[in-house]
Image (cartoon, rainbow, N blue to C red; front, side, top):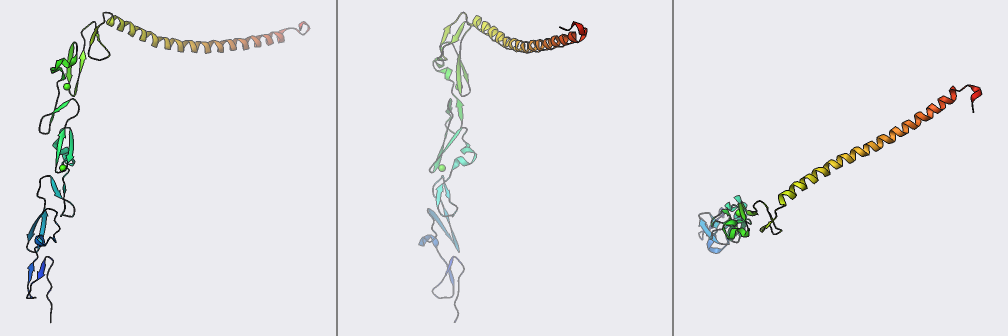
Length: 207
Ligand SMILES: [Ca+2]
Ligand SMILES: [Ca+2]
């Protein structure tokens, strides 16, 4: 008596002599979460929907994180979703409908609410004023300021004087230390002179 054994993926036929392929897809023994393709001696799983891929077990379909590869080709922001992904843009930019982002020209609408010049720049914009005007605290409205440029030149002078005053102060402090040193030296010289004068006097003239 002998018994036949079959390779993996095959089962012994009723005649106990030949091996025939097991259809893993039919019996569900393949364990594929979605598609299953049987082959002679084997089988494989596949995912039926775009945006999904086989997990490491080669059976379960999981979402593909498109953002992990080259930021999903999004120019700015990539957001992964279940079965897909979306692209978005940073503040100050608008989505061009595919993957890219383009600067919003804020000046094109209502002059960016600037009362005078509106200057567009990548991702933002700012307002500017003509001579003798300055921007108000809202950074949009220009207010009349005929003394602005004069004031700025005075302010620059004041800043200049302040920095010079610091230097002068440092010099004075150095001079105070110097005159204290001189005073102490003069005092020592005076004492030395006094003692020398005493020595020089004849003995009978000592007080
Ligand atoms: Ca996805
Ligand atoms: Ca802009």
